[in-house]
Image (cartoon, rainbow, N blue to C red):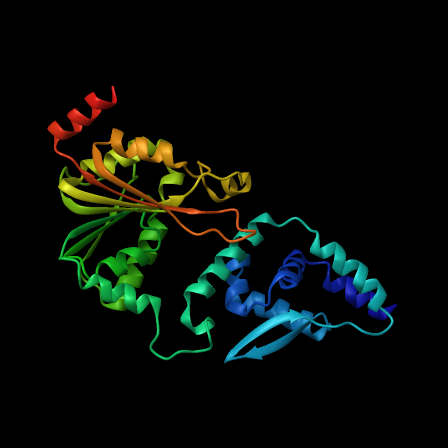
Length: 310
């Protein structure tokens, strides 16, 4: 009876059930679980400690990483646990599953998970090296969030203007930039559909995972086009059209965009030389990414394109 009481007490917490369900799908470390669950790391560590003490999870060390995985359960409650474990596997958790796929994608892009740790081998380092090929441009990061992309752009840009509607996000972005010694980033509060920037004031506009939050995506793209110099470039990264309605709880207004509608928005906003590329898709991952670029046309050339379309 005491063993059964302890087991059910362990399972009487939603966070621990989510952890157990995730570990049935993949071994994960504390940092990865923190990212998926949206719970502070001390809380995740406490739940893992309780599950480990209860004999439901175990640590597995590999190449300097500590992972957690389901533990074999023996004794009088083994049969009961097998039935409960099967129920936990079938619990609904689309949000957790989607974030798990993102974690697995990040693992694949991290050389340390490729064939063990490879000193000095890094996708981020290569991204920064490629930035050496780019001339010093004026860049606007629209919907900058916590400022990670703005910080990376500041390494090769002459100036970055980071725009977000959230005071909290801008405060965190400023703090990040200060901690890294970045001095060429300016922060502006504003909506991506009504930018606080002058016409033709930047060479590159970035819209990274921001468009699906806009009330009117076409208006946001037009605003990005407005602030570009003639010949300037819009770089856009967003989700391809999907059916995951649950993301609306995260603030998504649009379930991604299909290629045709996105191409149409870019052209309608006075952008030409449109290029679209679809990211790779993994089995079980409901999301694909669209990467798009387009250049701002002269008014005359835009009119000619519209006339041809008509």
